[in-house]
Image 1 (cartoon, rainbow, N blue to C red):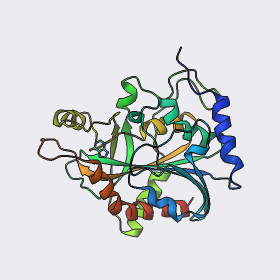
Image 2: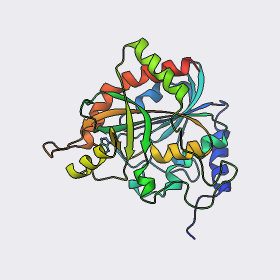
Image 3: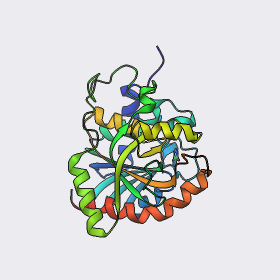
Image 4: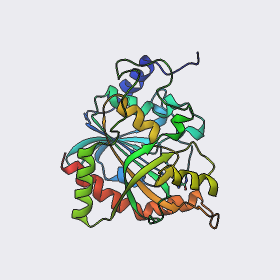
Length: 278
Ligand code: HPA
C-alpha cells in the first residue's frame, strides 16, 4: 500500500498551528487564485508561513501567497489560508487536503472556500461571483479521491454521505447578503479537473453536457474532506474567464489573476456579511 498522511502527522501540523495563536476559530477559509486580499482584512492577525508548519504543502503558483492568517474578521475568529495548493503542483491528494484536516483537528465547524473558475454557463461572465450549489467530483470519479487510503475514523466514516455537500443555511445567508449589498450572485455546479492544462473545446462541451456551470482545478478535494467530518461548507467561485467552447479565445493565468481584482470586493461583501450573521 502507498504511504498516506497519518493521524499523528495531522496532529503535529495542528499542534504547530495551535502553538502560534491564542485564537479559537470556528471558521476556516481558503482563498483561491488572485483572491487572497481578503486575508488582509483580518484584524490583529497571527501569521504563519506555510513553510513553518510540518507536513504542510507549499504553494508554487503565482497569485497564492502561502501563509495562514488567524485572527478576528467581522465578529468571528477565523483561520484563513492565503493561497492553497493544487493536485497538479505534484502533491498527493491527502497533502492537498491536509489544511482541512488541521481545521478539523482544531475544531473548526465551517469551511468557506473560494476559487477562480472558468464560466461554462453561457450567461456567466468574467467578474461574476457564483454560489456553488453542488459539484461534480470528476477528479474523484477518475480515482483521485482525497479519502482514498486508510480511513481516519476519528474524522468520519469510510463511506461518507455527499447528498448535501454545500450547506443550505449558509447558502441562504449568502443569497441574502448578496441581495442586501447589491451584488449579483450567480448559482451553479462547479466541476473540478486536475489541470494544469486548460480545457479543450471538446472537453468544455462535455462538461456543459454533464451539467457543469463553472470549471476549475481545486475546491472539490478540500470540500470532500470537509464533509467527511461534517463541516458546514460555503463555496463561492469567482468567474475569471469564459470557457472557450468554440475554440475562439485563449485562456491564461494572467487573465485569471486580473479578474480577481474585480471579484474580491464582491466576494468580500458576501463572505463578511455571512460572518456577521453566524
Ligand atoms: N479552466 C480551469 N480552471 C480555471 C479556469 C478555466 O477556464 N479559469 C480559472 N481556473
